[in-house]
Length: 260
Ligand code: PGA
Figure 1 (cartoon, rainbow, N blue to C red):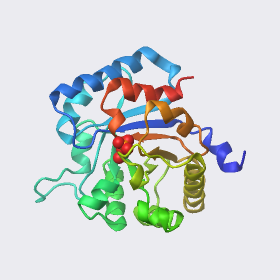
Figure 2 (figure 1 turned 60 degrees about the vertical axis):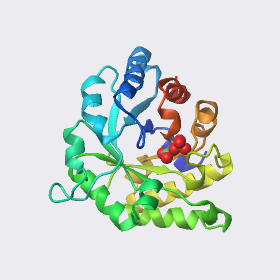
Figure 3 (figure 1 turned 45 degrees about the vertical axis):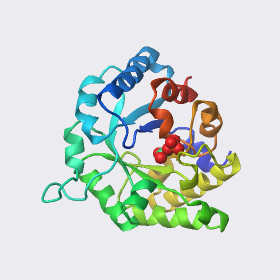
């Protein structure tokens, strides 16, 4: 076991569900079922669990889901605290609605809204200002992987998307290969280990002890049937789950990878 593995074993895992633009009122029952079951499991689950619903559901979910310590997160925020930005939501608003975290720089936002590393970095600072943990997403496209550019691309996103002065409480990294999101495809164990190992090295280089303690999640087609294998890889400290987080039974099947 190398040094970073040794450090990583003490990191409490995080399993976060990213509902994306899914979820009407009826879907609340799925989140509440997760809350209920986690409350029943008590200390048996060695991980923090979070659901990031659409912004429309944040407040009601944070008010209703209070049994288990289930955390609630947003999916994006504006860099400013308030002002003339029609349709946007600030980090302070997410916190006010009961969120403790926010996903930033997801590849869908980078692709659909042209978000750059610089903008993501400003959003991480905004999350920090509002007291939210930023879950910062990085990951290569299939073309970049096939061209052998994965490590360079991910390293560049990591450097550019993080402001100075962040720590293990305020930042979580999510490695999400773009080609693995929603496709049912996952990288090999060796490939995940290689990218997560590189991310850990970079975090330690830049943030020292804090970098050694930061959580690095894997995301992209995580499901109950592959969670144990993926979560067992060195420097994988949890999962960011899209499709399989929408149904309580699937999501809990993934969380079960952390049952002690
Ligand atoms: P997926 O999405 O689990 O549906 O592949 C992951 C994500 O986009 O966070």
